[in-house]
Length: 116
Image 1 (cartoon, rainbow, N blue to C red):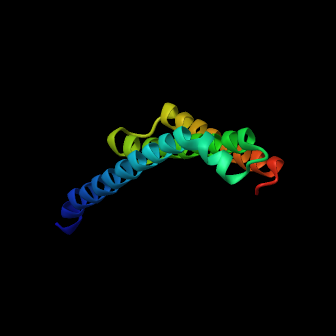
Image 2 (tube, helix red, strand yellow):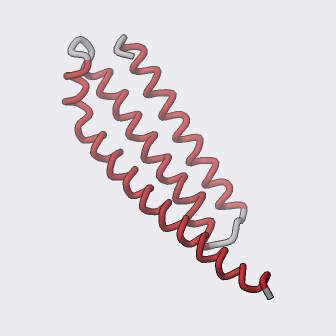
């Protein structure tokens, strides 16, 4: 009898985590878009000698944040709503690779400008 009652509770807990992940992903998306918008001005304040390079570094960081939000959505929200299949696995891996590439690019651009 107890095992039968645990299934709905586990489903509700998974739904709660999915809702929390969705809210976090929306926050990451908003932060990434705001960061993209203010990147040129922020770049000129951080390193006046190389404002464009720092601006692109900040934009790469924004792309990494947005890709991380997409990874969170695919990994937690979509995974809760639909069963795992090959497509969701591929989408998870692609989002993780985009986030990693954008993070590496942001660090490399910041290091090249001498501001890191």
